[in-house]
Image 1 (cartoon, rainbow, N blue to C red):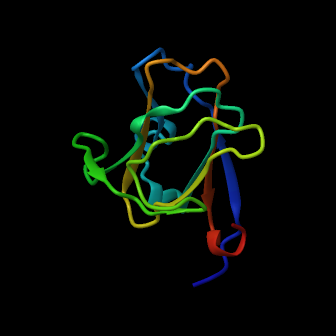
Image 2 (cartoon, rainbow, N blue to C red):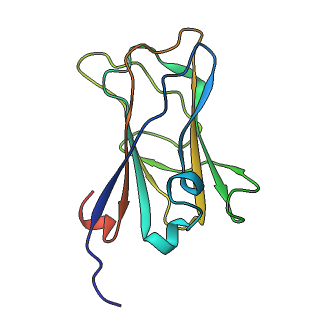
Length: 141
C-alpha cells in the first residue's frame, strides 16, 4: 500500500444555536455528498471551540455513526484525544486561557455526524473550527 498524502479539509460551521437548541456540527452525508468517509480517506475530525462564551448543555457534544448512508444513525461514544473521556461530553466555555479542542478518530466509520446542544444561554461567540483529516493522519496530528 502506497503513501497517501496528509490533507486537512475545513468544514463551515452552522449558525450559532439558540438557548437549548441542537445544531449539526458535521454530517459526512451532507458534507461529502453520501460518498462515505472511507472513499475519501477521512479518518479524523477535529473541533476547536476557541472563544466559546457559553458552555454546551450537559453532554451537549454528541456523535453518531451510520452504516447506511445516513438513513439510520446510532449513538456512538467516540474516544477523544486531547480531552479526557469520550462522547457525549459537555463543552466548557473558553476561559480566556484555555479553550476546548476535540480530536476524534473516525477511521472505522462509514459515515458520522456530530451535534452540539446549547445550554440555557446560547453562545454569542461562535463558530467553532471544524477540520477533517485524510491520508496519513497519525503523522500529522
